[in-house]
Amino acid sequence: MHLERAHHHAWRKIKSALASGIAFVSAVLVITPLALVFFHLVINGASSVNWDFFTKLPAPVGAVGGGMVNAIVGSLELLAIAGVIGIPIGVLGGVYLAEYGSARLNSVLRFLADVLNGVPSITWGVVVYGLVVLRFKGFSAYAGGLALGLIMIPLILRTTEEVVLLVPNGYREAALALGVSRWKTIVHIVMKTASKGIITGILLALARIGGETAPLLFTAFGNRFWNHSLSEPIAALPLQIFTYAISPYDDWHRQAWAGALVLVTGIFCVNILVRFLTRGRGAPVV
Amino acid sequence: MEVATAPASKAFGAPGEPASARQVMARPSRFGDKAFEWLTCAMALTVAVLVILTGWELWIGSVGAIKKFGFHFLTTSTWDPVADQFGALPFIYGTLVSSAIALIIAVPLGIATAAYLTELAPLWIRQPLVSLIEMLAAIPSVILGLWGIFVMIPWLRDYPFAWLKRFFGWTPLFSGSIYGPCMLAGGIIIAVMILPIIVSVSREILRSVPDLQREAAYGLGATRWEATRIAVLSYAKKGLFGAVILGLGRALGETMAVTMVIGNTPQIVASLFQPGYTLASVLANEFTEATTDIYLQALFEIGLVLFGITILVNLLAQLLLRTIATTSATRAVQ
Image (cartoon, rainbow over all chains, first blue to last red; front, side, top):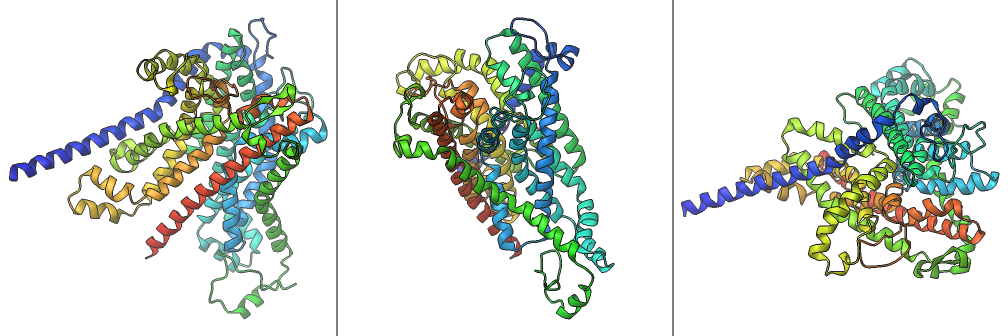
């Protein structure tokens, strides 16, 4: 009897250890792709990331060399346009959810923002195609920037709301008691206190849309040369990577790997910066 | 204009505050306040506008195709732009099958990982692992697709696929020849894309399980795994389901990586080694090639179908996750 019980106990312990082992293996499997992707990016891309890559236009098919300077600059221009649209709307909207509004309206808006965050990014490409490209009869940097900006809005809105809610009420009360008007209290005291968190949210949103390809396919469209006007098609790093990756040319594949390495490095740098800004607090992933 | 009785908010205006005091305080010009409130309100309302605008724009764009093909659009499987024949069934099929494969892979792995991160792992390893998973989430889809084309597919073809064919080749799922780009490869790459979100949401859910649950289980002499299974996982069942549905929403809309590895052939076949096509992929590939109006309208309708499906799935996920949040909050209060 006694022995049997001990036996049973040992078996339960073994089972527990086994389950922990399986869970550990799962965790390793989940991060394996990260390690492999990074490994192959460095192996295949590092040799093609050189001075030419950052200074030259893409070479014609067949010619070796060339770079992606137009795509890098194009991506930055698109991010700037997206930021002009997405940051003010997202930040101020988030402030509204945290500071004003009825509980009911706010929960509906919060709900809609979460739902929008789950809408596939290519949908925004289709919508902007109908809104801008068809209407103005052409692909343009504006259209691409708008598509990216729309993706940013719900992302920034939610992160801003979260951090503004964290500001202690005492700060607001102190300012109001001194006779500061409510909007000045919000702008100068509340938003300033939460500025680190707001900037974190903005940076994460920029890192996220910086790698977006699908919404740009039929808005920004891509361009093998310099973009001279924002109302014309513009190159973007993720788009160029896509075009090169599905092409049949070895030299373009090399360029795709190099572009991917540069893009991932940029995105990881922003993420590390964010981690630095939010030390001690878990950064939102979604 | 009654300025003094502006709606009380969460941040200001304690409940028992005498009205007269507020009226005295409210004398100075409040134009700036009103303007700022309306400005921020307008910005917050853009999310509602965006949902309506998106639905409207997709509807307007596809109304011609909806009139012409009606319900047949969703139930026929001929996609022939040259003959103006458009049936979306192969894309719907491809989207559902590739997402199902992704969930079959990602759900057990994701939930096991979340359980490891909150319950089973040594404390020092948790934060580094979480950071790594956040980095995986930050990898753009197109880069995963690039890796998929040049690294994952050749490896899959030579080892796991060959193995599957050898042992399960007699089933329809793994019959036929292996090309490389195929439904199974598409499902696997989607699994990689949705794992981070399933892990991070499941982890939040498991973390919100009250410690009392665990203490009760340990108090009864449960081992670590028994406590996890009985007190934590079964307690969090509904929330974990929400996490899975959220992952499904992302899987259905995954575009670039899938487009690069699934083979892009509109067909409905049992074998997972055969190329497939998804709703999002056909948009990515054919949108700029749509030369006729009806072709473009058919693609808009694909977009509308995709939007409709993902909105519904995300609504469901948010509802599931929201009830969890409120119930655990009420419990905390009690």
